[in-house]
Image 1: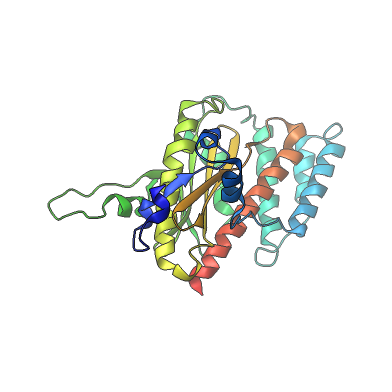
Image 2: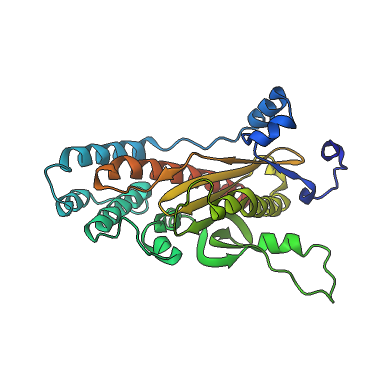
Length: 297
């Protein structure tokens, strides 16, 4: 394919985006080629810290032992027994606050969801994606924020007489200085994997925006451009996915999704479901922290 023979001066905008687990590529690549695309420079999500895992296991055991005998109020009191230091135990402090907030959602009958708007869901359920980055110099902005990386790509070659084109807008935008590390899209309901909004976000908007962000970062951090990974979150109702985009080779942007995880819909599943969500967001935090450190070196 001609993409593999471009001159080295060609912009990353000439890259194509490939999701190697998408069945459509089976007719375009051999099994060995797809295996190579998946495995070359794999950039896996980093492991979650043992400290956070141990705390989440304790919380899950607490829910299992208490749920049939105690009220939600008593469970909330149990989560408040320990005080964690923001600076030295940030991940535990962050997890504890989410657990308390999740229990309050059930006490106030906020779940199951009814007619909540996207803004309501961001404010009450998915806010912990924002607060996960409170201890680092990464700014998180919500409510339809325009991506500068997307705008920059769309305005390449623009002349003075032309009107400036706007970049894609996103529900969460994670940035530092002039660089963008992450974004997130939120829908007020989960219409299934075949839902129109989810298919559009996962199959078109997110890959394009992530490639734009990756391209801008690579121009700034040239010495680490093959190690950069961009993360995006997609939340539909109570469903949560993480997506990563990286560069296994010069002219390919690789795009991978995690399996969906669901915010707990019942009190009995608070321990296990919250644990899965917190572990995944913590892993994505590690990815963005790696990029942030490389940028500030």
